[in-house]
Image (cartoon, rainbow, N blue to C red; front, side, top):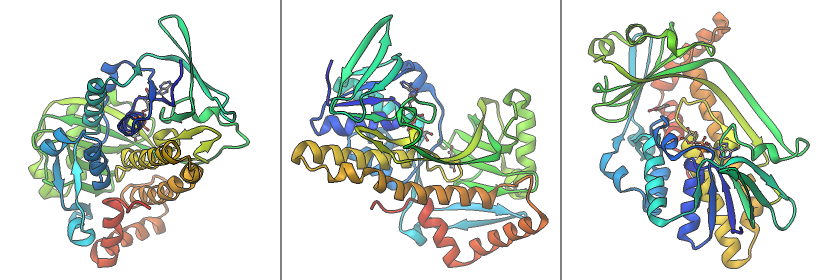
Length: 390
Ligand code: APR
Ligand code: PHB
């Protein structure tokens, strides 16, 4: 088999790329190790920057998003029993969109089914070969048979636990990592959200986030220890702990109900450099992970893929390799800004078990400063809504 671009991974990054290439008349095959049912059901974050919404509209998968999304012009920070709203729209000129990233996965899969994009699900033992030569290729097994695809380029869109990043020799790859001493316990419930906008709560019992998927479906998160087992959290225990971390007026309005899903996710910051090795290009979680505070994961993946598609289109249409050569540096400039913001938002809103009394006082002062100064609010707002594309 032969194709122009072999894509490893059929998550948001791989499917967005396949769509952008397909629309430009460039052939691609996607190799995905899971089943379509698994991908469609996977629960993810729910906040989109306008740039991501624009990209989905440009590639013709925005119809349901435009119908169902909620637009938020502001976001709240709560601390010391007080609530402070950051007016994102007034400060940055932009809003954010609430729409489940799981829904985007579904919308992309529907679009690819209609377009007939070759996507191989349940591809086993995917491996990458000949990356620094002229004809890189992908090998995989399916239904007991071995397959080999020769490509012009390979896109590694296989997430943090994928094989693409590992195919870059260790003496070439540099990794930067920070693991946080806590995780997020999240639940989804068929209840109206406690507030019409998100509330990020810094409380002495730990961080809590009130978010939503729709006007009838809420998503709440609690900071817990990284080793916490979701099985130890009954719904009652979760709701009681959440109420204890919210300002009294918010807690009083909380509507509780049975959880549909409950799970713990660790928090990590991670960047792999460079994002290109020979004819392999990494995009999305394969190259970088952010802690979820600020929900930059999918938005960053969308930015990578926009740059990568632009570079591949330039290569095929004009033979100019400048954008391909600049891909890694261009992505990383944006990635590091989002890393810095996600780390900062995490530091500002969470309780660190090893924080000294001095650090704790400084955190409280920073919250007071950020929420009371126009400059402070603006710096939060412009990063939260998404920095401009360079
Ligand atoms: N072979 C084939 N496919 C693989 C392999 C492999 N060895 N390893 C992983 N995959 C697949 C996974 O099953 C998954 O579907 O690659 C896909 C990677 O998808 P994501 O982990 O969602 O990563 P990405 O597409 O970069 O999405 C970025 O979107 O939904 C958000 O929170 C998510 O921050 C993440 C962002
Ligand atoms: C979510 O809705 O799941 C969400 C929103 C904002 C975040 C993280 C997660 O910062």
